[in-house]
Length: 81
Image 1 (cartoon, rainbow, N blue to C red):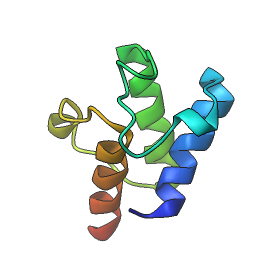
Image 2 (image 1 turned 90 degrees about the vertical axis):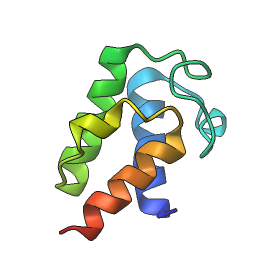
Image 3 (image 1 turned 180 degrees about the vertical axis):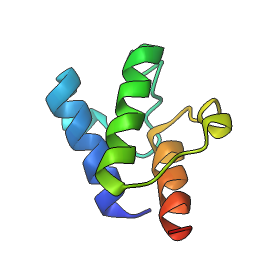
């Protein structure tokens, strides 16, 4: 996993939702472990898209259950650039 992508996600969660960075690991579950709402998740997706200048596939976002899923999806989008 690209550490830059993971670090960006971790930093966003820490600054915006006051999540302790130590709680954000690759296999941390977005909804169950971090208690993010759907709206908060979409805000996180928009930040990732803006930060890396990519477009994540809307159809795949439903499959994002863990931080690792979002990071890998972002990495795949970066490869298409």
